[in-house]
Image: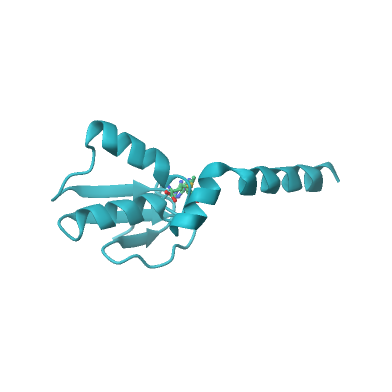
Length: 103
Ligand SMILES: C[S@@+](CC[C@H](N)C(=O)[O-])C[C@H]1O[C@@H](n2cnc3c(N)ncnc32)[C@H](O)[C@@H]1O
C-alpha cells in the first residue's frame, strides 16, 4: 500500500518536473541531457574527434546529445544493463559495466 502511494508520488513529481516537461517538448530522450548541456557550455567538454564512453547510458539523452555534437567525428560507445533504442553514430553494448568481457 505505502509502496503504491510512493510510486504514485514519484510519478507525479516526475511528470511535474520542469526538465521532464522540457525534454518532452524538445523531443530528447531524457531530462539528464540538460545537466550535460550546462556542463558542456561552461567547460567546453565535448570536442570533435573525441572518443567517449557513456556508462549507464539508457535511455540515451547524453549519447544523443554527444552524437549530434560530434556528428560522426569521433567515437561513442554507450553501455547499459537495460536495452537502449538505436542511435545513429553510437555503438551500444548491453551489459553490466563492472563485469569483465570474455573474449
Ligand atoms: C540516470 S540513468 C542514465 C541516464 C542517461 N545519462 C541519459 O542521459 O539518458 C542511469 C542508468 O545507469 C544504468 N546502470 C546503473 N548501473 C549500471 C551498471 N553497473 N552497468 C550498466 N548500466 C548501469 C541504469 O540501468 C540506468 O539506465
